[in-house]
Image (tube, rainbow over all chains, first blue to last red; front, top):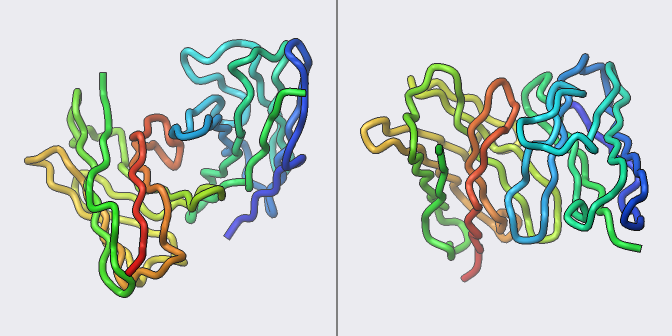
Length: 107
Length: 118
């Protein structure tokens, strides 16, 4: 299985800040990397697919980059609704696997 | 628009079989573009992909669960189902159904909590 490791596991930031979350794969996954946002009691929501493509309806303050084994999710100008847990996921090979999550909290 | 809704018993006894259904509304499960999958999340923990099915019945599973999992589809009901046998407390989780294309999970159900307890 491909192991996905996110850092940090948690992050405190303020409204208006720029934050970056990192995801590393245990082997190359090309650009088969997706990012999801999950709020408490809700299902995950797809934000970014194929490393950098923004899902329809997702604000442009979210962006993704990377290829191979190292990827980042960047949120510019944090909004109150962005405080949530973020997961990366590889869709390169079965079994599809997720990172352990990064909880973004209000400072 | 397309929606997915999980349903099934919320409480399962240890060693028994957990059964959940996912009903697709607002569109056809027989779309040639999509697979339909199950993902679970133990309380306070991360996400685990369980397995997926195509409308034709073709399936693929997470090897870690493969010996206990069966996913099936009923196109007449626009529904697909999950059965997980020989459950233990470690199988207590919120179970989500989702639509995907090559592992890209773009539409999710709201989730159903299944608790394993005697």
